[in-house]
Length: 143
Length: 143
DNA sequence: AATTGAGGTTAGACGTAGTCTATTTCTTGG
DNA sequence: CCAAGAAATAGACTACGTCTAACCTCAATT
Ligand SMILES: [Mn+2]
Ligand SMILES: [Mn+2]
Ligand SMILES: [Zn+2]
Ligand SMILES: [Zn+2]
Image (cartoon, rainbow over all chains, first blue to last red; front, side, top):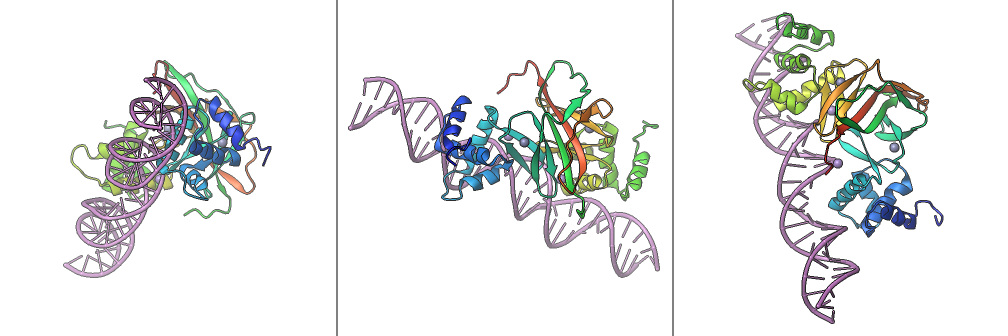
């Protein structure tokens, strides 16, 4: 993985671009997300970062993810009432959410379009638009 | 409110239509949602139902809301990681979410349209499509 | 080299939405 | 009235996320 776009050197640069001091824990957490390019929960990220030897506390995982979100290095996806997913892809895009597997998949922002958005309530501005397409396996036996 | 569409008699009928045995607590919870026509959290519903004298336990509030959702009498809206909202409006529609106030507002399903939804992953079917437009007051000082 | 202080990490207590369990109460039909 | 299933309940419990207070790291200052 020498010329991986998401090697640790590239990640250090990326953190700096976003005004984030690249500490060891921050690099590992960013690496977990960017090298996989998947949607992970805080839990999954903590597990990924602590596989070899326990390096990072729960507090740091949450501190770091919240910092990354605030600096817009990553994005939060809220689809499951029981946990937040973190998304290394900050391009405009949307999501399939597989209800059976609990897995998110990207829908390209160039494919899916919205039309007819009504004017906003007075004095309001848009922060973001999230489209979630909830899907399930056809042969799924529902409770 | 004699000829309210959402008086308790109409609600009893509605519960029966959806195969729900209309007990006292279920009627009160449905009434809280349908008479207001607002998006409420479990917490707010419990408060609404227990204003005069405490009639309904937390367990019953959650049992009942989950039953209503399963029978599709109401719908869940997942926009805030800290609580679920319950929506008495089950027509196809979407939502503005005011991040500052924590309040949901409906966007009519006839106004906002989606185009270019890619084909689903193999063997999957759509359960629902949620569009959340997150908005904030323009003069909002961000953290 | 010692001191300082800011930024970062940590363990573990804490808050809290939602679930579960064991028990009690209600309803309904015989 | 009785039996039995359905519903409601208190309160223990779980789990995600936050907070606090102590500790560590490191670079700037003396
Ligand atoms: Mn958050
Ligand atoms: Mn639920
Ligand atoms: Zn994504
Ligand atoms: Zn709605």
